[in-house]
Image (cartoon, rainbow, N blue to C red; front, top):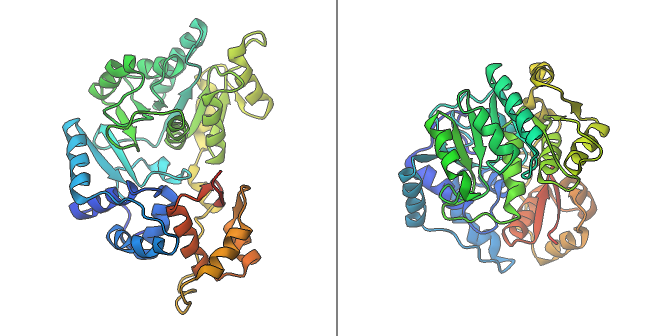
Amino acid sequence: MPARADGTALTAAERIAWLRLIRTDNVGPQTFRQLLRREGSAEAALAALPRLTRRLGATPRIPSVAEAEDEMAGLARLGGRFVASVEADYPALLKYASGAPPLLAVIGRSQPSLQRTVGIVGARNASTAGQKLTRQLATELGAAGYVVVSGLARGIDAAAHRASLATGTVAALAGGMDRIYPEENVPLAAEIVAQGGMLVSEMPLGWEPRARDFPRRNRLVAGLSLGIVVVEAARRSGSLITARMALEQDREVFAVPGSPLDPRAEGCNALIQQGARLVTGAADVVAALGEADPARRTLFEPDWKPEPDADAAEAPPGDAELERLLSALSYTPVPVDDLIRATGLPPGAMQTLLLGLDLDGRIEWSSGQLVALKG
């Protein structure tokens, strides 16, 4: 990350550079962090991109300053702002999530108190009983001092938000702030903000949510929460994706049991069989979250980076080094350290080549600092 103290606000120029960098083609959160660590600032990273991608023939499109300013102005017209991961009002729990967005678009409370949060997710075609239990859980968790996080979907999500309007709720969006989905929940989104809650998104303004964007939204729900409660979920459900992401981020996972005859209970019952905490009421959640601390995750999964100054005297990697790396990569994710041992490449050269392949859209990162060829 840049050489600055956590909690200090970005300057106007830095914020524009951060936005341009994260909106550049094939620059995701992992690549963003690698570029800032390598180059020292977003401005320097933008200047270095042509050099880093030239060898691969990649030409990622970098948004102009004017485009970044237009997006910032558009968000401001909606009453929102961009919050950077190094700033004090960035949600603290989200910093410990895999692939936390460097910039988060936020509409709502100016100084969020999101240290005590619970995500509630479940089926869009929720049963009457499931929605009733969701309202009860959200109300009681709010009374216990927890902010409720969900994804603004139909069914369980919407019931959780409505029941926690008075005590605080956060909605993570799959699309841009001006493309709230589903459209029927636009009034609910407005009410969340009006009553002191918050909307968050990592997607650009004007972005219509696609199927692949909902897992990204689920990652935000999990990252913003100390724990996730799954109320109703089928065997193949986005709610189970959220639960898996919560486990990967060292968050607690809870599930409400249901009848074996109800397909909407299959996912929750399976989670309980796999070790999720069984929930019969809010007290079960509150008791389990008393010692929850996602910060401990950093002890087990630090970002991969070369040793300081290890590559200071190295020559830039060439075509031969690139071929060695491509031969060692596969569609199965592997740790970077394993690639270094397999190829014999110095850490600095490995970082340079991985950055170039990432910017060319040829590799992808997964939880645990694993890298694989993109399918």
